[in-house]
Length: 460
Image (tube, rainbow, N blue to C red; front, side, top):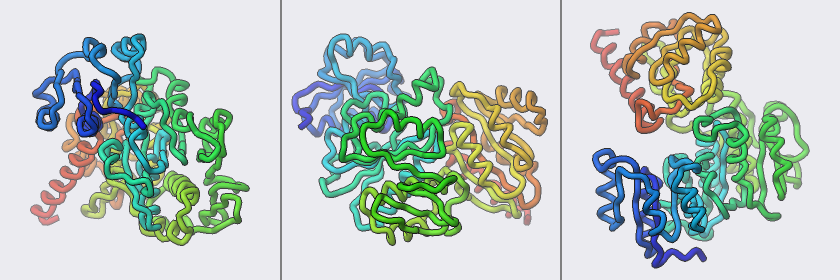
């Protein structure tokens, strides 16, 4: 049993997961030193909450001098693992763990954990929906928006947890051991944080680092980087594939999602019955089917859930149709590979709105994926100039630079061809202009709403 009572815990990073961790630690009998480099004015709501629960606040300062006061340290996902205070803690023998690790140590229920560069949120939400429809009390947590730690006191041993896990969260895990884990895909991302692609892959692979014989690891057979990780797995591996038939796992056969865990092949449903668009979502569905089969969900419930699942907010979300133009919110497309998948899901000519915080990657593949689909590119944010230069280098001239997302929506509406699409899929993080991708998506949807009102007032 993880003993917290009477301990002094330093919580570094006071966003959602940090505040939630502080709350649970205090309720478990710990003294919490709550630290962030942001000021009290920048963290007004968080400060109100933390003050009310009795946390000791240390704001607008690095945590280095607080390490000696703590028995152990909990870091939020936004805190890099190479921060100086972490080295100080490790040198003095203080354990540094992530919020996900803390939640795992306090959680009584079995955990399904899902990671990957893209598709995590959709796969996590779909897996949770299947398990709920199958009659399991299910908690969907993690990087999807609800901190895992915030639910641990509600989770009972007979429940199931489905957790979306990011590479940032995995960096500071130690004992974390889901009974089923999945890596959906790995493409270049977060190099500003992880420094090299190899470091990024290694962070993802931590999801199965502690797997034992009774556990199962799910990998994408169509992704070479992911499938090669099987050599690092010490337990059973099952694959999913959109492109080839497998002896075990989940695959497409005659257009039908098919699963076999070793007890016989079972057809689930035809891919045309899926409501979520795009080939990438077929892969997400395959992963979810396999994970739920491992969790012993009845096959008929798996099929029922697949046929009614409409996707998640901010992921190729149809916002509205105005004068025949479809507006899609893909704000969760925070890297080029995610945006390429969104482009491939579009039917008809599309104006792409892209740009945001630079994560250190290249946009060459994004521009090369435009084909005949993307007729115009509207760019904004920190990476706007980088996108413009990449476009020109590839011979793509239909680029417009704007200052705000509201301006981007209006400009895209003027540029889009009849019966076409306006797609927000930034291929970048949001933090240069927004608090997170969710706020960016909400601003996009509000801009579309205002555009509709304006057109209705004009009688269009």
